[in-house]
Image 1 (tube, rainbow, N blue to C red):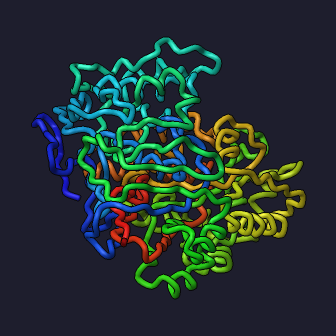
Image 2: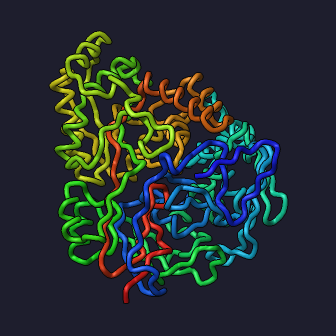
Image 3: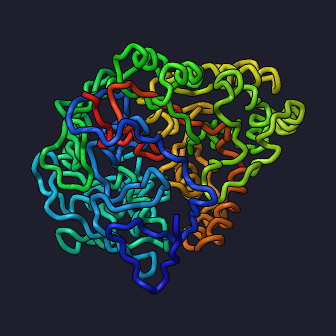
Length: 543
């Protein structure tokens, strides 16, 4: 994307993409090309279905799960959206955002829009939502997305057991019904990109008053509204919102999310014609999907990375040498070949190779398979006693397959004989990890929200992150990158990445390639590599 360095000159975004301080040059190394629409433009109307794994929450600020975000993409309009072609940020619920110093931002919202219950959407609707997510005691998953805003620390005291000294962010000022002034803690040129994340969507009064009730029957401001309520582990049904006042044009009348316990089951249902879209075709079925669906099968580079997280506050994993030994004992290439048919690529960096500033081999020998060196390092660090518990979700059969491979490699290469599996539903695993109740390494992935190194670093290593790791020099370098421009910003982020790879609280494993398939009943299928996933509003039904 193009770059404009914003200093004292005012920069205003209206109908055009915003320009950012950090150079993200799409022509050199941009985000993945989205799935190309077919049978476009199509006609409005009709119903289609989407295969889905059970979400954890449907209140935007409470979740960072891709399963949840896929549904929220239809229900809510956050201030901004990312163009699926190149990742540039564009207005959605907002009309514009302006700044003179990358610290104080004035966000202007559309007037005359309402929530699905008829309640008016105002600047206060956004401020209330952001304050609720940022207030530490609420325990909402997206809390740290608001850490850039002034006053966040008062809502989230660093000292364990300390009470917040405020209930709202001092950096939020409702100027009038359609204007919100946002003051950040420090210059952050990528703030407009952050506004595309669903947690920044507005919330009606009902969400603040009774969040648990709202969670199963959310009321949004997007082009689709909930029909009934979320029927857990079964279905979520959406219908077009007739009074929608935003810029998106919903094509289908209805969208039925069918919830499956595994991607393999969902793929079988797609073949049988019982569901229209599967955005995550199992890698083991890639050749079959290509043969069966032809042009209705898409494979493309992804910003999603699988990793093994380590609880560094557990004395057994406190020594970085132990963490590095575990990393070097894992045969990434062998696992991706055997389980993913070579579709996934072994990771050599925290950052996906589609992101500007990615450095191949940044992880060095630590991410290379070397059993002898791994055992030597493990023994030098004193090894550890007791069982090794591995945590992962049951949403995909391949997770247990490769966890089994890793367990065997750790037994063979490091001599860890007592390995136990802790397999559970994603909706159960997420709160367990958030609360630090796991007693061993955990399998997770990181799905980029927007195409920037910063999103990996701030997203994975935020204060209080699931590994429990922190480093002041790392934090300082990320802050330096946030305030810098162009190459200086990327250089600072890369130095921060070096520290993360030195200490290795998260072990990079492999980068996904996204595989999707859909039925011949639908067209104009657009799937991007960010939080939006399938663009629900664009799909047409061939009737």
